[in-house]
Amino acid sequence: QERRAKAAAAENAAFSAEFLGAARRVFAMIDVDNSGTLTKEEIKKSVKSDKEVIDFLKDCGEENLQFLLEPKRLDRALNALDTSQDGEIDADEWEAAIYRGLEKRTADLKAEQERRAKAAAAADEEFSAEFLSAARKVFEMIDVDNSGTLTKQEIITAVKENKEVKMFLANCGNENLQYLLVPSRLNHALSVLDKDGDDEIDANEWEDAIAKALQKKLEQRRAMREANAEAFRKEIEEFTANFLNAAREAFALIDKDDSGSLAIDEITTAVKSDKVVKDFLKTCGDETLMFLLQPKRLDHALRELDTDGSGEVDIDEWEEAIRRGLSKRLEQLADELSLDDLDLLIEASQKKRRRKRAPKVKPAEEEAQPAVPAATSLTAAFQSPERVAEQKRQEFELLMQDVVYESGSSLTDLRLLEGLRGKKKKGQSVFATGFWTKLFKPPPRPGRPPAEK
Image (cartoon, rainbow, N blue to C red; front, side, top):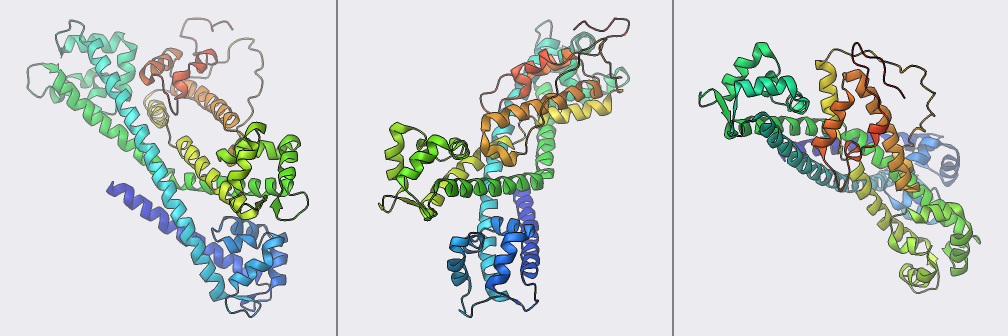
């Protein structure tokens, strides 16, 4: 917990420094005459043509700065930002707005960190249960006489003949358990594991070693998550910016008369005929907005959205629903980024270092495989969660196809992994789905011809 707090504090500090640096650069870019103040004309020109300015304002977290991007709201935003009412925005007024945006962004970051921590804790809990279950199963496999203890001969036999035992020990994370696989180190490993010196490893001694192994595996998972925290944060930022842009585009497409509010007939027409609007509403995350697509629920949804009872949905009412939807989608994205299969990637990496690299074998006369479409960035996830899940699965297929050959694993090893992982209800592991058993072919064993297609 202390380590997580330190990591979060470091992440917040780095984000704040980066944010403030970007804010100062953007001010200088808008202030083309170097007067130290921003005129309306300078702002209008920059928000039309300068990509860095546009990207920063979209993501800055301060409502009035974001409204500078919307012509209909520009004058109102300038009036709110120009606290001295001199017709220009000086450096102090700009920084006051920037610090409001920073406060909002750091609050969002904290919420995202909490979501991430919650998802990580759930994934670690699930991993721990699976790991301990696999450890108990391996103990029973080695203990062929059901005596409740493991003799040296039972261990020697198991590590020679039982692939599942070998797979578990090789990847368990405890050095002495791994040494059971190395004949020259077997006696030393047994002496360390056998705490009471009776020349056998009982259940308590086994569980002590497994507890140390589990602790190391969890440390590896935490280290990997911390190393990827910055990348996760950038994914969240980019996703948020794209989601809000899509929401603004949908509003503009519905608002045919450019009145700044959505009439019932405009909404009814758009949800019937405009594909962009329909695609966004399907995956926007807010139940009320999604109900606009269902004729039987349309009237109820409109009443829920129209909080002031004016008969129309204005921009503020729309954005309130969008914020609810964004919050829901960010929770889903945090689950996707929880590194549910992190342990498998760690194991594959370790296996690659331990084993001699196996040559890649190309099956004879194999037909060209159709190209697998590359997954889009998570920033496009709002378009279709099902589509993104499928694309992520395809990416992982390609990754693990490399792991088969690079690590020297066999198809049997991967099937054993499937047994160790088990089935998942949430964040299901790709190794539990069985899809890869149809895709991967093991390298042919020495002395045997390649398997037929």
